[in-house]
Image 1 (cartoon, one colour):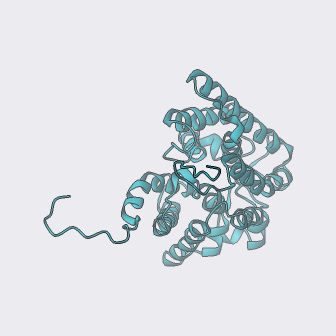
Image 2 (tube, rainbow, N blue to C red):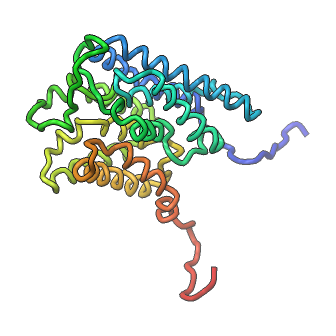
Length: 313
């Protein structure tokens, strides 16, 4: 017979997307924030970004070789982790501390749990929290923004650690203030987020609900919602890290619940904890709850009968 029917296992319809293409889109989306960091903090920021990316790629290569697994550095996920971690660090941090963070992110959080897609928390955020707890002074010492002058620049406060009247909305949008490399320029982060949504790399549900919830919570406790949204790492976290495929829900209502939890926790931690920033901790806490959220929000199969009361499963 000339016309043969071939039978194969599902899926029968495949997407053109791949891990490498998705990660490349994320890297492209982070280009505006990267350029903004160089303009605001100077060439030293570019060096820190290079150190983090190179360290993450090298750690993944060595780790996969030691574990006798296929090399995965070609999927660019290690590059994304390194770039995100760098954008969560202050420009004047010791590069050795940054390298330690890369080891935590790749070896401990990612590879020890099986590699890409198997980690239950975001590697870059987990590394940031470890560094924040281990090296609080280095992680919370900021230099004067807008053209980084010298390694011994005087430390300056971030908007969240200052009086809200100290910075205008324009300064927050442009990022002309102290902070981590990638969290200061709101315009650059929004451009990157729009690119990811247009490319259908991320769903707008999580970042939009996260930001909206943060604004509503700010109003409830008497804070300026716009100031809270544009300050700190909220936009960076909501757009690039809360939307991580492996650590966020896949169901529609799961995404909503997850994002609401992130927004509520972020503002509560900012207001009532002993640290001005709460994005990293809120996202990590909600990452841990993702299995429960998905279990509660997974739709039932059509036509499935409900169990009678008292009936055993």
